[in-house]
Image (cartoon, rainbow, N blue to C red):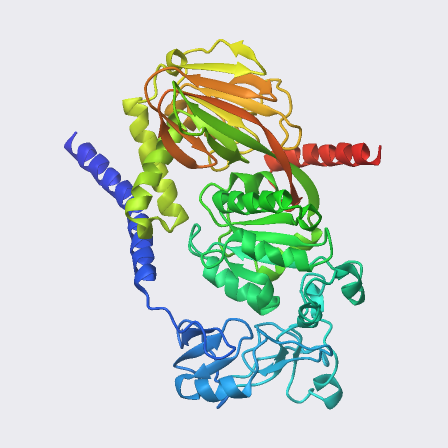
Length: 552
């Protein structure tokens, strides 16, 4: 028995180490990243970042020497050794802040992307270990030193593959020349850019998920006009979206790089545009998921999370190919019980509302993240913390006997509740970081769920362990029904609640969920699993129905 006991103890120790070591390494890297000294943000027109031999092997664009420690520009890709920075900044103009009517190629020598091909001879560029060959910072074409000719050097730039997404500096220059108070015909201004021009505005939250926002900002600025790429840690979504009002009506697209909370923030800003009579300039919204759950992005075909494995160029192609769909947005009104001078709490909902164990996990997670935010910058760590609190609740059962504490009404009809611990009100297909909650195991007949039909799906769960079983398709939820209006009355005690991942502890109150508005979203159909393919075919049917309704 002793050898077996030792073997079991050794196996348990190995298992614990296999789980803890990656988490600890990720936490350590997150702390180091937070303490890392940032490079100079601006120097003249360039947006500099530190680079070195190990982080980004490059050659100085001024002297041609291999850079051991220097700077590179996030917008135009110019690289300079520490000693050559000022000279390079004076000699080479950055794409940021450029203006003018005629537009020729803007060439930067050396450090061309790997596997790039010469536009003249078709052979690979940048293959020699030195500063060589040229790249246009707008259309991204590359040319060998020996293939560079005067006609190419001075030729007009057509902005390349992403010309229909780029806002040319010449267009912004024309807009700036329009006198104040004079009506502007933006459609006429954009007529030379073609009927397919649908300019893209990129909004990135650098604090979301794995802190990949800063890297993405740099890459998008390199491919697009820096004037159309915004950091949401420095500017509010509403101010950034004012750029839409300088574009032709109903032409703009927005790519939100962040979690579901960031998407909700941007959609609130879009609603504010509608209130201020700017509905003709409201953009269509695509998502690059950087958060932890990313359920809205998953429901719209953008995947469960971006890990840096897809090139930014492919992301832009996906945005260009995406289909337009509608997303229901809901108003959640929380009215405290008894007489109160306070106004009811009003929230916007895109994904789901819940009361019970999943809201408790979100509340515990949120509380600890507020205390030590630097430890929660990794998706792996975040999910590990959620797993810990879910396991804890399986043992403690803090939300038991929910059916005795709460009343549920669907479209005014009282629903008899079984012995539940949680209730979830769904607007979208995914919940809890990738689980199709309404479908469950898929072995029972149920009405289809949609995010554009003005209906909510309401389900119950027996506890955290039941939630875990549903996640791995070993159990079905308690389907309580579908409704246009949902009303919950919390009669006694405090309960954890959440709307789209934003949790709080709530005392006795009445929660009323009603339809608010529609948001114009972009739906991406890409490589999918079998479950996603079936939901995608349903989505295609829904789009066909919407199109036929619009035609009628």
